[in-house]
Amino acid sequence: MKKTTTHLADGRELIYFDLDGSPGRDTVDRRPPQRLDSSPELRLDPATGDWVAIASHRQGRTHHPPTDACPLCPSGDGHSSEIPAADYDVAVFENRFPSLAGRSGRCEVVCFTPEHGASFADLTEERARLVLDAWTDRTERLSALPGVEQVYCFENRGAEIGVTLAHPHGQIYAFPFAAPRTAKMVAAAARHRSATGANLFDELLAEARATPARLVLAAEHWTAFVPYAARWPYEVHLYPHRRVRDLTGLTEAARAEFPGMYLELLRRFDRLFRREGEAAQATPTPYVSAWHQAPKTSGRELALHLELFTVRRSADKLKFLAGVESGMDSFVNDIAPEAAARRLREVAS
Image 1: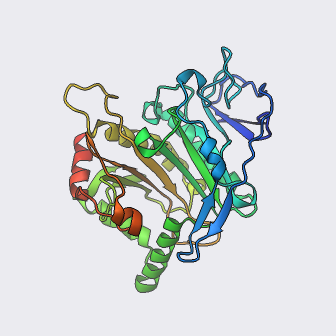
Image 2: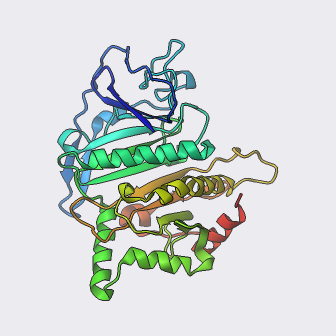
Image 3: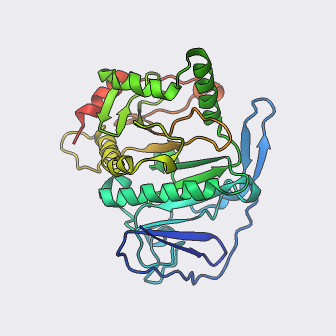
């Protein structure tokens, strides 16, 4: 991997991650510097103990631009984007419209490919491994920043999820706190250790591997399964067999095997709702792909894992978070986890 670090005209950091042998990248942002006045604020909800980011400047962020004005495509032919180079393999830059900034954390954008009409599932295993290497690099670098407690790498895909830029990309949040869902996991793991003396996540993985009805995909170093109490219509958790706290702890063997596993899962998701005779991308499945990593100062029991889920429950129906989910955070799933796992096995490559 070849890494090139530079800065955009307004001072934001830009990092190119290229395969060995890729040509040098144009690192000069020729746009006039126009620093956005972004001052997100964190406020603590005294009723729940949860932090809420107030980021009113995001109301003005780029919203479904035409393809020839995409800010994530390479620059060229009179179009200047967030990425000055005429081509790239993977590019990461500080978000122009961050939810967290300064002492309140940091937000980055990860562009998986220069191809506007592609998706992560279209990447080769070599390119998917490069994205994993970029996630790992950013996890290590951002974790080292003062005040950062947890690094969260994720992808939102599809307008149904709320994505406003069609170009295949993900994001990274460096939180100055442990996210609420993480805090719940940390507390559950601590209770489990106290009650049983065992690690909760080791036992979840072992139980899933012993339950064929919820198993989706298994290999030498990773296992993908539908959790027993899945919240989303189709939800898959992907665990490395060797428990680590974050991406930096993965072995080389696990890194080498991950691209094939992950790409197969994404391609199965895209086949979930395809009607007979439809083209491969006729009904691209909206999804969230979320890496769960342990916080720096808490959660020693937490195991790195990826959670992949979709809000689509059938070809023409979405799962909306209605009153019981949005108002009380109490989920109701319309699809049995065993049925979801069976369908995900049926659409294997």
